[in-house]
Image 1 (cartoon, rainbow, N blue to C red):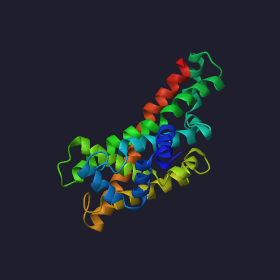
Image 2: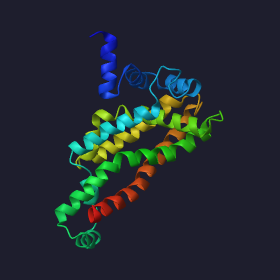
Image 3: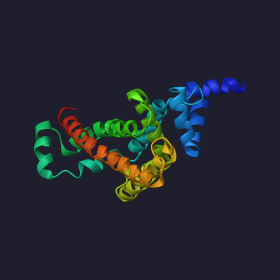
Image 4: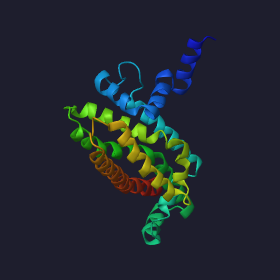
Length: 231
């Protein structure tokens, strides 16, 4: 089979081809140039790169796989008080283990995509506001998913640490640092011009992202509990 046939087979089997691999590489080594390509050349950067939303969904899929392998999202359920869980378990008519399993299944399924939605909703207004161009919402969300890709790509190899109680706090600190650096690397001369302003904006958008994650936890737990009762 020739190289072209292998390329098509890879794309058909995994959804990843040359454009995706090039995007992964350039998001790591030249994220600012990738952002400019997206802003001037359209959602595929002039035919060079993968669409940022498509790539971000693929990265989220890998994180979801890690979540399932590591045992799901049960650690969030264990933070709820017995007084909260007991009447819901009784209402469900299930054993505690069955209730927790059903709730965990729903939360594990929705944890990563729900966080992704809230990250985008909290970040896009800031990136649109900080850009000197009148981006409109379409390009603002395109820029947002590129920023999220630059943030997420280095995290993926270590994502499993976020689902272990012993390392979850350290992983959260790692995410803060990587997100902070991702903004500075991707947004130079577009979202900020001076280092001081860049650091301040990086701190603000990182805070907004973690606020988004906290807000997303509320409907996530509610859906999980509903799944435990009615699933």
